[in-house]
Image (cartoon, rainbow, N blue to C red; front, side, top):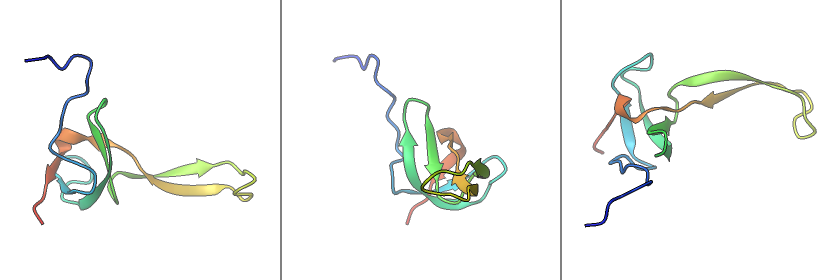
Length: 83
């Protein structure tokens, strides 16, 4: 059997799964997994761990201002929900 050297670990949670947050500030919230980051063992869940970020003006967005983005949370803090 070949060893899995230098490969990220495998997880049972995949992109598109519905998960429930079991610990932290967003405990009890349910959302869809937008992205899995295996090297860091983190996931980005829609509507969970949302932060307000200041954005400088650019050509695409001349006004700048604020945007709300979802930050990653550790995969151990979420549980897969059936359905």
